[in-house]
Image 1 (cartoon, rainbow, N blue to C red):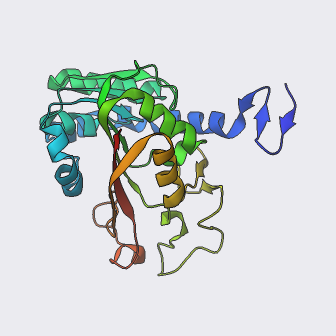
Image 2: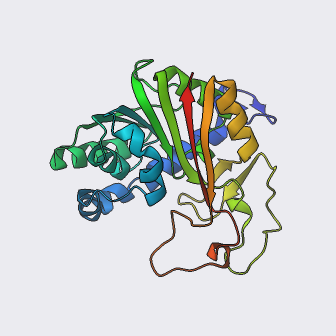
Length: 260
């Protein structure tokens, strides 16, 4: 084995945290197999996009865009994107399990959504192919380098193409679910934290502030068109409540940018 670099957590040129996260994500993606029929039924309703997503994406989707969905996960959003107007979707996920299950669902539903396994940034997709790059709902927390991610997005986009992000708000890791307040073990400006609720005994999530995300997008040559923040979480389980969801705190946001 190579030497460990404490600053970057590297062994033999391999980022330990990223490698562990890949294992965690692959294990978590087994859910897509265990609950395949339930997810297929949910996908068939084509309702996974939020009202805010449909409102903001409506003008873009009416142009029948080619969409690249980075970190596509279960692929339900891809079915909904096609239903809302996308001509086709190429999903990218580094879980073989997730990409395989999503591709099978798309075929069963007759949806033009296709999947490749690859890392982000560095997706094995042709540069300049996308009218719209769609991502979010738990994607950016896996990005070790937000600037490299933004540059990768810009490379995928055609001139005039759009980036759309719908994500958990960067402040969410601070909220205490049990009572209204901030967790004493978290900080908004921390580099990362271990998610103690994630399968596979925890995975490391990188914390990018809203300012860092916007700056990375602009530096990559994209022009911000929309930035909205919402008190509602998109991950809220049915029947579950938390003090942080009562409308006083930001829990999600949407960002749209255009390649100049």
